[in-house]
Image 1 (cartoon, rainbow, N blue to C red):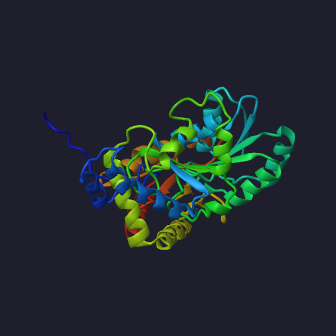
Image 2 (image 1 turned 45 degrees about the horizontal axis):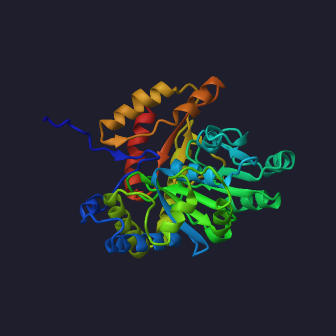
Image 3 (image 1 turned 135 degrees about the vertical axis):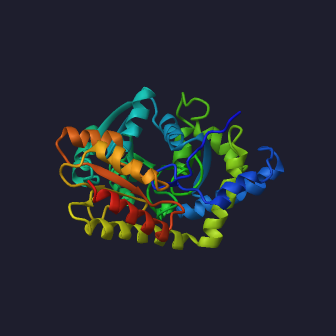
Length: 379
């Protein structure tokens, strides 16, 4: 069979992300039985290092759900929103709507509180809605991947708990790239994934489940099988997954988390992400007509959105800039399609994204931004 000529591109999109060669090669470590003692050699360190990256101890139980971040998020909805309860979802962008869509598709009573693209959660508006709706559960996005806005997780959780509700947090695109201090966050369950800031292939949704969430899940009915967090937790405490995992990915996860914690260092990793955000901010400020989309103080450390000058179209970003950079060996992110379509319909300027999460380095980013700038100046 003839082999296609796959392009080797450096990914500067927001997921999946660049994977180091040594992490790729870790998939070649010996396969193993997921109910065998060999499993402990991988999964016990994985769970320990997941907790270290999250800033928590045994107050949260890490579980691995086969799938992606949305799998862990759906498990939190199925397991923690009981019949007759209402979930309020708080959205600051296209991915912020996902929790609401998951709840609605599972027949849960739910409402979606939406904020303007590029804006963080307005706590006053949220509090008014909490008083009005009196939800039992509230979901929101820690890091909005379509807009580059990061919400203050602890402050939002504090407000939610003030009104007696349980906070569920989507941290898919920030976990592993910024400090969470999960133990002091107030989140009942925090969901994330492998393919973003951890610099791994897609394949696992990761859930950090509090004791409070576990106790509630035991009483909720109709949770399904893979979305029942109580079933996951029983096996997680044995360092196992509910069903057969991708053992190649488990090997990669064991290797990568050990490298992050014991070689690069957690604080160094977080500082590198902040440095790259600052690089993009200075770069955007230096190009006429371009500026950061997210407001200062709410800009993600793992990815950035840049606002284009008036007149730049989505087609120019996709067919012009993106394809030109593809020819130089880079995969550029011309902006989230639904976001730019909504901005275009409202007569607003277009945005593009720069992914600088995972194992992207400042040197890699500097080279990419230089090439990107040359193409943008042709518009």
